[in-house]
Length: 256
Image 1: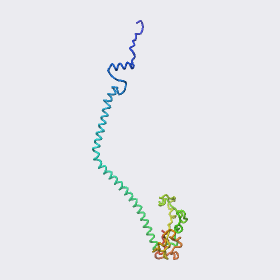
Image 2: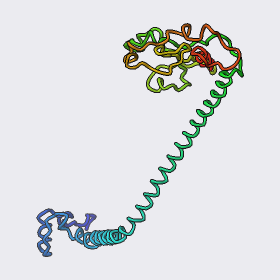
Image 3: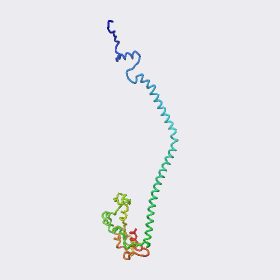
Image 4: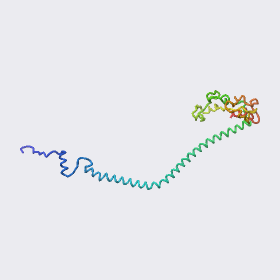
C-alpha cells in the first residue's frame, strides 16, 4: 500500500429519506402513513393493556351498582328509623335545655316574689316601722296623658337603665349605661299612677261611672302626685293595718 490509507467505500446515508422509508414499507407489505393510531406498537398497547383495564373497570362498576341496587331498598327502613330517632333525641335535648333555663328563671322570679310578698305583709300589718314620708316615685300620668309621645313629656324623662338589668327596653334597642356593681340599685324608681275619678274619700274605687268618664285620655283623670292622695292628712298609722287609704298603700309601695 506504500503507506496509503485503505480505501473507504460509501454505502449511502445511515438515515434513510422519506422515499427510502416508503419503499421499505411498500416492500414489506405494510401500509403505515406515520399516524399514531396506525402504529403497530400503539395497537398492541391498546389491545393488551388499555382494553383489559377498561373492561375490568366497567365490570367492577356494573357489579357494584348491581349490588347497591339490590341492597339499598333493605337499608331505607333502618336508615329512616335512625333518622327519626336522631331527630327525636335532638328535640328532647333542646326541650330539656329550655326547660332547665325556664326552671331557673321561674325559680328566681318566684323567690323574689315570695320575698317581696313577705316584706309587704310585714309593712302592711305593722310588723315593720316606716317613716311618715313617701319614697320618691315617678309621677306624671295626668301631665303626660295627652302627650304625643314619651319624649315630649318632661315628667317622664328617661330613668337610669343599667345594662345588667337586661330591661325589655334595652333588648328592643334602647340605650343603657354601664354602672359599677351595686351603684345602680338606688337609681331604680317605681312608677305611680292612680285614677282619681269615682274615688271614695279614702281613695278606693269600688265602682265606675263609665262611660260618663274615662272614655279617652282627655276624659280620664289621674292623681297629679302623692301630695294630693286621699289619706295624706291622717298621716302614717302606727298600729293596725296600713292599707286603709290610697296614701297608705302608695307609701308601702314606695318602700318595696
